[in-house]
Length: 223
Length: 249
Image (cartoon, rainbow over all chains, first blue to last red; front, side, top):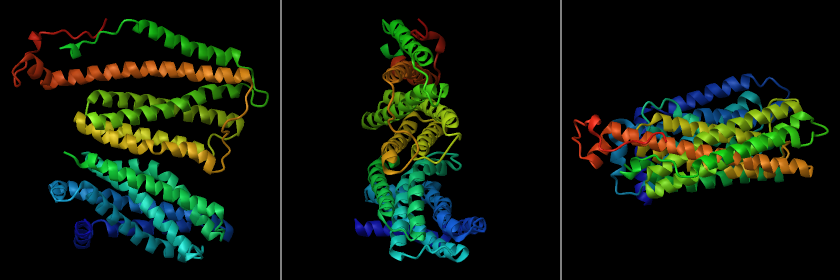
């Protein structure tokens, strides 16, 4: 199972490395959004610390949806998805592989956007590196856990336009709010019970949608 | 052949009258029986409709997801028709929740919209309903449409606990269960019951309409002819159908 999972992850990463169709666009969009947002942050330091978390997660979400959307759209070209499902692996493994590739994509995005936000705004988002890492990691998994099955769903729809973004955004809003609040509290140096409650919320959300995605993915790919 | 008949069961007219009477009684009670609230005045009467709509928006979501799950288990399009009916009515109730809530908020908080977890989660439910209906509208093949919509409905319903938890986990300004005068409480319950009866009737009627839509689509596709009438698949003969569609009583 692990070896097969790795091969499927490798297939997607190799495909992306050769074609460079998604990640550069995602990273560029993230950088553009971050620059535009930070230009608007002409506020006193307290105000900047208050809104930096929300703007950071908005930038991650806007750019990240691009990667989520492409993760299954690629498989709908030239019947690649059918070939993928002919692999001697369960659909759950396919789902987990796609999920992990999306997690890698968003992790790369976060690794660029967080330092960029710090450089452009001066907000100390890395004042507590482990706390930031925890929130970024959980938020990343939560977004991908919801976004991956919805991307598979949208890929089944012809002439779908930006449907996956329309499906993903409403469900992601709670995670976005919780992760933004947790990041704001890090920037304000307030790692107390309130911060921990937001972190738990994001973790619970990620867990719920990881389980549901694993269970429901079979229904999305059966044909 | 029986499935082609659309005769309404006996007593259906009585159910219609009872549902109409229930909702009419609720509206009259809201207008004339409920006492006027001292601080908010007449605007407080919006709450009776708002709470009923919020409940129906939530109930529609649960019906939509439950029937969707049953569809996935049984693959019977009848359950998908229930799911679609519940989603459409739930969307309507959810839209009215946001509209009435906004009107009440303007009268009470002096703002049309404010940051509050319950408001946001209500909005999220409405947006998920919109996504569900968009997905349905984008697909033609009935079983593919039913399957994808069912997955989305179940994914969406997992958001519902957040609606409930959000008010407890986060600090909001939305009242959770304010103390009410017994007369107000009675009218509120009557309103919820009346609108629920009315929406249940609409649900049944909409599902019956979708069932007929499905049958007509079968006829258009030639499925019914070949399966039940033995007509030539490539040359159906609509004028020689050996059955009657009872569209009206």
